[in-house]
Image 1 (tube, one colour):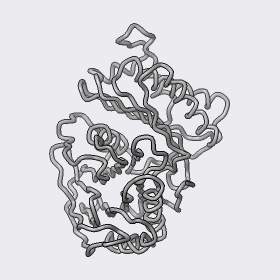
Image 2 (cartoon, helix red, strand yellow):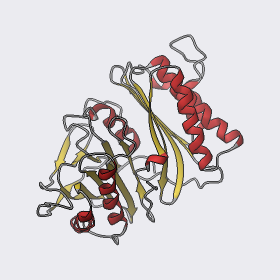
Image 3 (cartoon, helix red, strand yellow):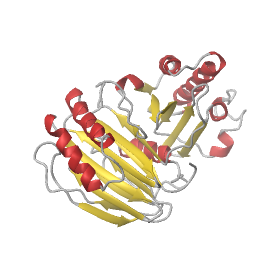
Image 4 (cartoon, one colour):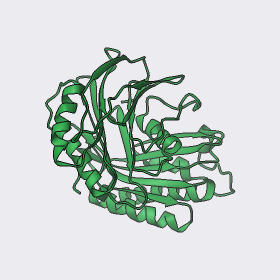
Length: 349
């Protein structure tokens, strides 16, 4: 399936532009490097810059093999508002890093190696992030801008999608756009999984892209529901996040979960039962107060709702990709397509 693009929108990558690799043995590093190379070349990386991408991918994968348990790497192209970047996302489930600032210093090692991995990744990437706790493990990402690409501000949102098992296409999809200080965000969980679920989620994304902004979440959800009638349908959530007004407006149909999340507590956002495109229920929109610095999270039922970020001290709530990756690791335990979209209201832009 081709990439779903829309003017100003950031959307979950197509299967051709995203791959999750389990990294638990030395040979996996070569596979990560090959995939990163292929996607980087598609974006015009060459010469020294391509070698830097290859080095970062190799170092991240090697660190997983040597120092972590149940390591995974997501290699993908992310298209932000018409611009494309290469992104590496590394996730493991322990043992974690006791002292993150020290670990990124060149020369530091817990295994007697050169210790160049984490420091070199941070140095080579245009943007990077790292969060780790002893026990739960580590999430790390690195973003690489194509040669000559603009140094655009990072949007205040980020999402991740992972298909079930060995499926190629993910039946979940998200899209988000920043307009005049408001983030419009949509996440769809297509019914079931595989190509037909992906087709339903794609219809939801295209309907969002075709909706003129500004618009209420309820109205966008109505248009999505109409567009999905030719598909098997799915669960859909739409949010308008307005930090300046201190407000979130939300409309959901089905079991896509919505949350307002802070360092100490979270609040659920109310969806109504139904399936967009088939036996849809009545659409209702609700408004919620948005505390300063809080994040808004949407996720499919591939993630359990029994999670908390309150016991993740030091997590940067201004970095949406770290929030999304941490949730994917800690809550994405169900055997299903998995997707999470995080919208932040503070931190770097």
